[in-house]
Image (cartoon, rainbow, N blue to C red; front, side, top):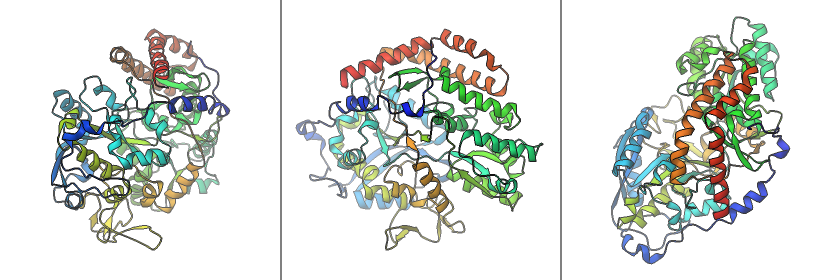
Length: 549
């Protein structure tokens, strides 16, 4: 019931034009009547548009839920706070929550009606749980108050991405971070000195990647060439998320796993964990384990163990992103093996072609419904628009104060002060941009132009981004918003299905369950209400298209 014909690269674009035209027909946003907000404009600028610096007409304070990152614990003496108030006439009352407890605490505060007005660090999809209660604002009703947000959505052709956030009522409840282009960071890091030693080239496909591991294993038979990290709490979460999109879908496995994947050839959602493409990914990973190319302890080991194996020559290959390459792997190798070199490789291609998946939307902001009743509501929306969506506000949040934390050269290139470090730019500096100043803080600094995003990238990382930029970006899945009753039913099915798929996936990969039992596994998944769930998803998708398309 779940088997689908092989989805090839040539079919990626099938149906996309019709879908795009349907979504584009959705109603416009931000149709707020001015008189509805007459009593909520205290402190707001009478004239505020694209390029304007927002400055409240009187001193204001807004409450904000603050995700307190352990690597740069909040400091009320940061320059960020002082400069923000000086520029905007706004101060922020932070409700601080440790990173490890953020999602749980956020839910408790919203459920109790005690959430601050501004609720950042919310990833697309997480807002859905709070829609039916009315605790968060249908923010699409008020984006007319946000000229910078609207400008970037229009200029970067982001409306289709925004539409993916819409709920059953056709509105969206999250202000996402906006990127000019898809940003791919996670990939595989490889010991390049081993490649040179063995006369190997960087692999261009996943088949070549396996051949590379085979060559390493032949030369070092006592070594597992690849031993991975980021398996807690999702075993092989990063690796499956890296490999999955190679098979032509914007969701697949690991961190990115969702029970429903949109098949653009069939123009319907299918169950992810039983797709032929998902099976191919499982078979590929199984082959690595079966041939002794991949460390089976990767499924349970913590990050420190994985890094130590890499550092001591017990492995040569590991999942990575730009920061872990610089901050974790290279220092560990330098301490244990000074002659070792390691680098990110361009994500390999698969038979469907050279594709990448990703969203141009990042974590964003929910607004408490209580904020709508504040006399300062319009001013708050203007403030949010300036800080999170204007070019000037994004530059400030990322780089700080020109002439103090950074300067610009004649070409407009940002140059960090030589006594300030950030992601290894000035490794011997005495100060740190995040820890000592509060800039490049994940609560405030995200999204923006590709130029701003890449302004802190090394030449090496820029080359990686250029290579990834040559790949075709897969379209995002269309909206499939549940009604309140459907959401309650879906919740009963989603977690058991996901847990079972991931459990069985690992058994197949590790050889604890023979791949000849795949059909039996498919039947087991069906017995756990997979088809009923997919029917529910497709019903929601079709209804949304009929009502809002």
